[in-house]
Image (cartoon, rainbow, N blue to C red; front, side, top):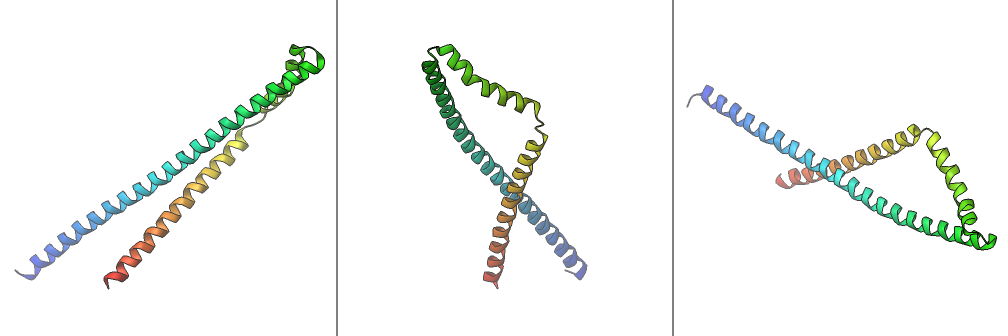
Length: 137
């Protein structure tokens, strides 16, 4: 073989290795992304379940308050009416208030958590690669 054929074979081999490296890198990034997304989904389900249980508890406390006020006033309907007034006020205030601030804050928090997770997974990956390369030498 002459030198030009060896050079072309080396270039071709380098291209194949580079292509394989890029493919593996893309796969690794997609795995890291899917891991972070699944973690966020799992945490969201946990928070949603906690919120549901807490809401149920508040509902039963509000019902108990309504019955208690009804017994005090000897009129169950009036007890429920009085207990519902604060709920109507809070509901009206929440409907009229701008949710843009709350939405932006939640979105920023989710993005921050996602980016922290990416940085953490890439730090672990980088330290693993450094360990592998130092073990080969």
